[in-house]
Image (cartoon, rainbow, N blue to C red; front, side, top):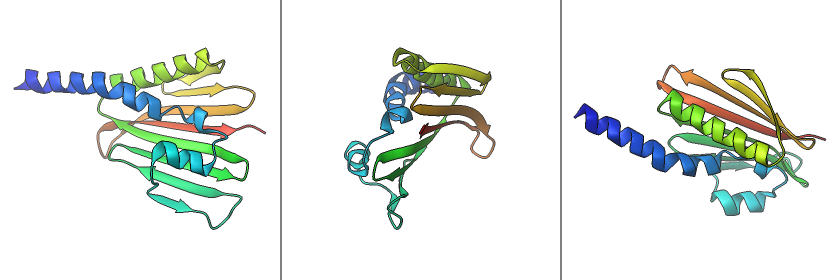
Length: 148
């Protein structure tokens, strides 16, 4: 039975990581309009548009949360928090993200084993991972901001 559960966990990682990897490219959302975010992500869980210079759009799934802050020029801050079952899964996800960013011309700085800064002239992205002691899962947090 334990072998079967381990096999299921490995299969979940193999099939779910490519899907999750697409969802964490927060730097690619910088500059998008609210309409473009909605077209890509679907109907938001909540949206606060009471201040046109700071429209906040939120999404939530069972294992992820997303927040986008935008104005008339588009999204200037995008954040994601994903919960993964294992540290290895979190490390692989971050490794793929950083590799893809480097291919797009970003520079990567390792701040420590669980914290990275990836940036270009126009976008800065902070990537952090930590153990969530309440859920016993590994949280990967990504915050991308537009540089002025």
